[in-house]
Structures are given as structure tokens and as C-alpha cells.
Length: 504
Image 1 (spheres, rainbow, N blue to C red):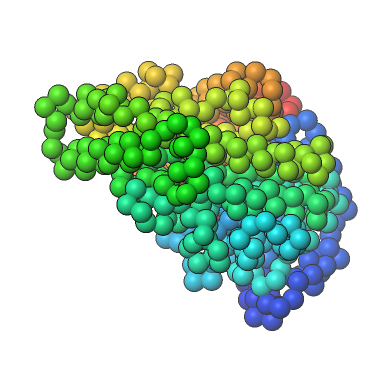
Image 2 (cartoon, helix red, strand yellow; image 1 turned 30 degrees about the vertical axis):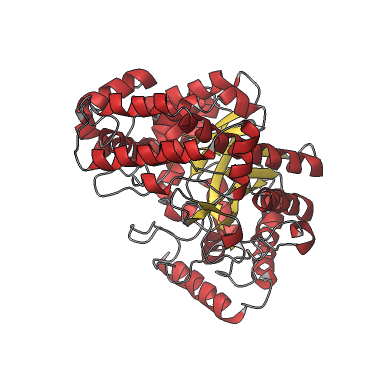
């Protein structure tokens, strides 16, 4: 095995050095010459694997597909074709242990991200975001490489596209959000026509230029209110950096009859409250009362947050419409972020039934192992501001009641992780929520990185979570986040759970 990995890594290095100006066709065709006879894909439920382009270059297309089919019982590939983030693209996240496959070497210095397929210029005439070609792997077109081999095996291929950018992208300064202090940020304004046009151009390009089966779209961004509070598992509290106050948002405020001055004033007051709370400066009536008073005095805060949500959901509708315009039979799915699971405030702004009208399926995040640490971080954040008067242990108990959770206490949860029962309950909640209007595919945590205190999935954990999602009635599963951070024993446990369920 070690010799095989060495040969694979040497092949990859030679590829990067010698084919930066080529299409990568030689690498793909070499794999296809050695392709085995087609293997039947699993029938019934959609069993998916999220994977980045680099894994196919590092390990070989056929070898990776063999693992997906033989070990994981996968019949659908969710191939990351667009992202500048390491959550979906690239090798293992720097600083985390490498899995037992692929090169044991970080791509931290070479990783760039972007579009791993070939952009066709005719689709991007109405957006300033034209130059997004990924440079990590030369001119390799990952769809040209993977599609023929996957189709030969009867496997479906979806383009996984993520709204994560980098500041060096040409044109991004023209479409970036503007924060409360007038600073440009690294996120894109969802009301900017160039941004909306980019996403519709990208998915149209994929669906017209390649024989894909559809698109899975990722957008994990929160609105200004939750961002100000840090009411998420994955962010620091930066209340002065809430967005957006660009010209398009000024226009939206006017159309809705909102006073932008009042919006600014309200978020400035909230910023002062958050800063004081973080410094331990307790208001006379307590933290929660003072926070609620600001909401009462400035109803514009909630209205402005809703503007963000509506813009985000409009992008989802745009993506769906663009794909269906190419071919109605193509499938569109949306990734529903983890904060939707354990933040009741966020839940209230997201209706599964409404989202179901914009998609063929929803990938709901039920990452149970890393979920323990994430849930704890969420409690830490809200306990630092709005609920600072409440002990964290009691706050988590209260939140568990709101969410219908039965999990380990605050002090034990990060190390223990969330249970398989959590996967079952959240999957069932989503199924009940969409009311039969779209399919539900829970995302199963296989090796998602955690901090030192967090739980990493064991094969037993993976088996139990996979079974829980299926027993809840899911229409399929998506193994997440990306193959390049998964250990093969866990991958095999997931496949065993799928096969055992099908036999039951």
C-alpha cells in the first residue's frame, strides 16, 4: 500500500510540474484505459459522497471510484467543482491528521480553489466575476476526468458549488458586502445583480456543458442579526462587521419603506451592547432584557435581517430556475447548514416547507460527532452576550428542551459528540417539515475535523449515524464533508450500514 501511495504521489507531482498548460486529458484517459467492467450502482436510495478534485488527482479516478462503490456503497458523487474554501476542496485541513489514503503531505502552500471545471465565457457576460478558474491542478477539468468513468459505472454526478470566495478574485471588490463601518468584506452581496448573475451563469454552464445529473448548492452565510450575536458554531463575535450597507441594500430599504439611518442606528446600539457584554458590563436590567429592549426600540433590526434571508433564498430560487431551464429532469439540492440544527432563532427564519418548493432535495447537516463541539461553541457564544446571566450548563439544558434533544451535558458534550438519536430526530424533523414536497438526504459526519476537545468519528459511530438516518426514513444520505479527510475504516462502516439496512 505504501508503495502504491508513493507512486500515486509521484504521478501527481509530475502532473503538476508538466501539465500546467494542458487539459489533464492524459491523466484521465490513462485511468479509463484501465477501467474495470461497469459495476451496478445501488438501487433505491441515493447514497452520496462529497469529494474534491484533488482526491482524483492524488489517488486516481478509478481507484477512488472503486473505494466509493466497494467500501461505501455509493451510487452518487457530489463533486466539488466550485469553492475557494477548504471545507469542500483541497486535501486534509492543515493541522489535522492525514487519513490512511492519499499523500501524507499538506497542500497548504499550493491550494487556491475556484472553478475546477472549464468556464465557458459565453455564460459569464453579465457578471464581473469572470476569472474564477482554479489554478491548483493546472488546467485539469475535473468533470471531463470523472464523468466518463462514473457514468460507465452507472454512478450519478452532481456539481457541488459553495459560496466561499477569496479576496484576490478579480472583480470581487465590485460585489463585496459593505459593513456597518463602511468597510468592504470578503463576502458577496446577495442583492448585487453581478452576484446573482454569476451563480446562474455557473450552474447553467455546468448543466449545459457537461452531462451532469444536477447541482448541490452550498451557502452557509447568516444574516446581520445572528452575525452580530455570534449565534453560530463557527464564527467569532464581530458586531461591528454586520452587513450589508451597499447601494443595492440602500435601494432595497427604500423600496420596503425602511429607514436606512434607523437600521444603522439600531445595529450601532446592538454593537455597543455586544461590546459591553463581552467586557462583562452588565446592564441594570440584565443582558437579555437589554437585548430585547433594543429589538423593541429598533424593529428595523429584524426587518433588515429578513432582507438578507430573502436575498439568500432568491439566490436559491435563481439557481433552481437556471438548472431547470437547461433540462427539467436535472436535480437541484441545497445544503442546509448546521446552525439550523441547534439554533432555535435561526430555525425560526427557515421553513423546511418553503425551502422544499425551491429544491428537489435538501441535504440537512446532522454531523453528530463534530456536532458536540459545535453545539458547545454555539452555547459559549450566546452565553457571552444575550444570555450572559445564565450558567452555560443551564442554558444548554433549556436549549435542549426547545430543540427536543436528549444529549450529554455541557461539560461532556464536546468529547462525547451528539448521539445517533440526534441524527434520527433531526432527519425525522426535516422529513415532517417538507411535507413530501422534496427529498431529505442527511449529511453524515465521517472524519470532520474538530479541536482537541472534540470527538472524531469511529467506525462504530459512523455505522450508527448512517443507520439512524436511514431508519428515520431519509431518501438517501450524503457522506460528508469530503473524502480527503475520511479514514477508510469509517468509509467502510458507512457502506456496511447501508447494505445492512437494505437487507433488513
